[in-house]
Image (cartoon, rainbow, N blue to C red; front, top):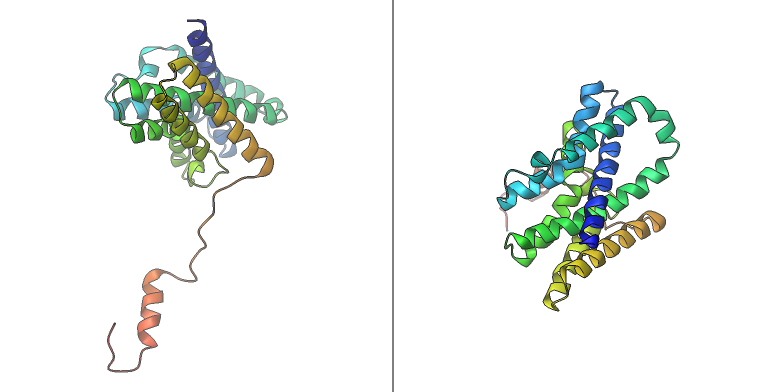
Amino acid sequence: MAGMNLIHALDLFGTLAFAVSGAFRAVKHELDLLGVASLAVATGVGGGIIRDVLLGSTPPVSLVDQKYILICLLGAILVFFLAPKIARRWDYVIAADAVGLSVFAALGAAKAESCGAVPLTVILMAMITASGGGLIRDLLVLEIPAMLKSDFYATAALIGGFGYVLLGHFRVGENPRLACTIIVTLCLRVLAMKFRMRLPRIKSLPDSPSRLTQHRKNQKPPGTGDP
């Protein structure tokens, strides 16, 4: 019971960290108070809402337990009035964000498994819970989602979710699995930030595929067709 209380406390802590990071995105775009609050809430609870809806577990937890929304609003207010002071301690926010990512990945995997999801879905729900809020945040401000380009962010959650599933095959208890998932995801995220780890990126094409195709056709001798 004490372990689950600690996980719940870390869940709320991670929600606050995500809310603060979301609110700072609003500061970047100079949004008003409502905009700050909206991005804070979207980032803090968006991933959990997406997970619960996809799993058919409705209403989502954050819409039943009002502590989650209130914590997000607290993060929005803190950023709105104390943004310069918080920005000078951004390394602490990033560290808290890494903890939130790790806890959300573990809880997302556990929630999916409790709903009878297959292993692959459990792994995907770990990633979606951890990074879905950031996806919504970025789309709201018309940016490429960070989870698609950031340094080992969603990938860390995926690997953590895989670890949760793997330990389940060896009949490890739920609390140790949660703890191991949090530790693995957190370590991967910290290492990624320290050593700038990232997945390989695709190189851009010199032109659009249609123009490249047209250029290829124009270079063929007259009377020849496509192979």
